[in-house]
Length: 155
Image 1 (cartoon, helix red, strand yellow):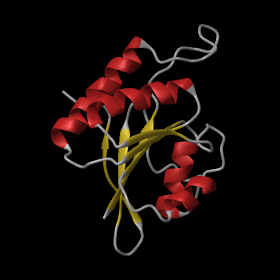
Image 2 (image 1 turned 120 degrees about the vertical axis):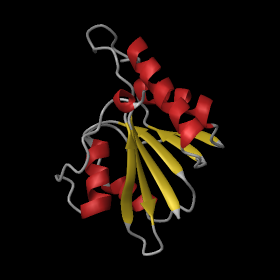
Image 3 (image 1 turned 30 degrees about the vertical axis):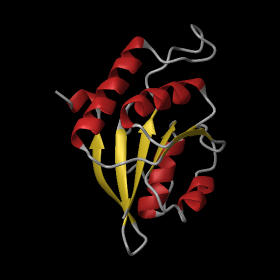
Image 4 (image 1 turned 135 degrees about the vertical axis):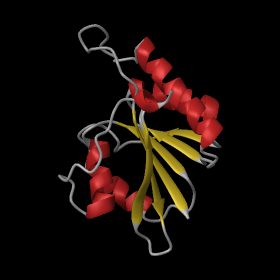
C-alpha cells in the first residue's frame, strides 16, 4: 500500500496586505493542530513532503515537517494553483513511498478528482485550509480516499 496525503496550504494574508502571501497566525495554529493530530493518531510514516514554490505552501510544509518528521521536504514545480494536474498524475503513477503534497486550489481539487474519477471538474472533496486528505493506492493500482482531517473537526 502507498499513501498520498493532499494538503491545502494554511490560510494566507491577502495579497494587498502581504504580496508574498505568508500564512496568518490562525493558519499557523490550524496547521499545528492538524500536524499534532496526525502525529499522535494516524501512525503512518511520510517519506517526503513536497510543496509548491509559493511561500504559503512552503511555510505550511515546514510546520507539518516539524511534527511529522519526513526524510525530505522538497519544493517542486507544477503545484501552483493553475498548474496542469496531469503533471502530478503522471509523477504519482510510479511512487513507491508515502508522500504528502502541500499545494493550492484549484490544482489539488483537480488532481484528486482525476485520481479518483478521471474527471478534473468533479469536485470530490471540499478542501479547506490546513486540511489533509488521505488516499491509498491498492494492489489494483487504483487510488481511494480513506479519510480527511480538517482543523475545524479536531477537538
